[in-house]
Structures are given as C-alpha cells and as structure tokens.
Image (tube, rainbow, N blue to C red; front, side, top):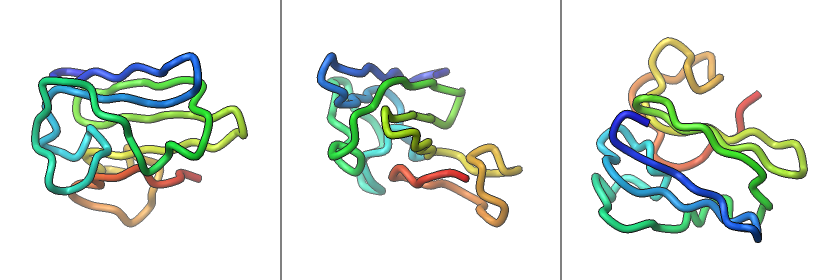
Length: 94
C-alpha cells in the first residue's frame, strides 16, 4: 500500500504493519499504526493464499475461495454497495 504492508506466512496467516488510519491493517478500530507485523486475527481461521494492498485498503483471498476486504470504503472500492467511511476489520466481499 501507500504506507502499509502485508505478508502471508507459509501456513496461511496474514500479517500487516504500517499506517492504519483508514483501517487498512485489519486489526480493529483501535490500531492507527504499527511498526511491527501483527496477525489479522479476524481471518486467522482461514488459510490466506494471497493479499493485495491498495493505497488505503487491503484485500485477501483464501484457499477456500473467500475474498475479504477492509480499509477505506468510499465509492464501493471494498465491494460493498452501501459502505462509506472505514472498515477496520476484514469483511467478506461479494
């Protein structure tokens, strides 16, 4: 992303770090920034197979075929029709 990063472990866990001012870290509303990687616990039960960081949002897909998105949600960028503002935890898109 512009000021945040994400990585997936061999075991399918997702970690994020950096700026979280728009919820793009996926670690909840209380985390505005993190200098060290934190597990995105909301989807830790799923096996994440890939991740992509936009400027102020993040998307992750799983081996089970689920797509999760979070961060700045204006103009439908997270795949939700009626979402405005920020989504600070992963939500299933679609």
